[in-house]
Length: 211
Ligand SMILES: Cc1cc2nc3c(=O)[nH]c(=O)nc-3n(C[C@H](O)[C@H](O)[C@H](O)COP(=O)(O)O)c2cc1C
Image (cartoon, rainbow, N blue to C red):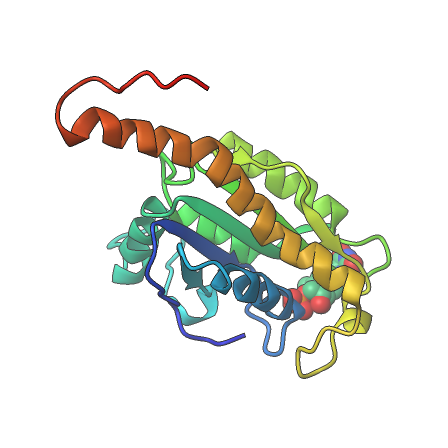
């Protein structure tokens, strides 16, 4: 995946994608690249890609906070929705991902935001455990974890070493992480934003529309 910290496009819906592997040549970033590509197909969506490999994030609770840490918090605060892509490490999600979540602080900027999950595993069982653990932690900090997390098993057979996806069905499922999140936002977040605009635009109460 492109290592730039932020991929910006113009638009109203802002999606932050955070990846949880810093291993050189890692497969999590390959899967996340498909999600980013899917998001880039939607003109009203702006994408901010957060790769912890390029951030300086000191251990949570230590001082002084790094500028990367405060930037990370701001970037997630500004998100309409968030995608977390984690590898399966030792039967759970990665310590890198946990570090990012802890660095976000409390109250977490994930609170009240829709969060979609993607897990990538080398094993045949897939990333089921990491996704369950991650779901629990994200819910704990107040994120709205969406149903249909996607787990990629045997990932070294799904992508080649250049990051090309070799499995059409897996590609569809990985891309669905992006489309499911956008669908949720369109159905549940955008109506609230529109109502808010109606309320604020001219100070008059919203019009009642018959359907
Ligand atoms: C420290 C470590 C622990 C791992 N533990 C597991 C595991 O418990 N189950 C599994 O299926 N794969 C495990 N793997 C393999 C990863 O899931 C595999 O490398 C996969 O590509 C996702 O990680 P990556 O994004 O860093 O490439 C482990 C890999 C590492 C480096």
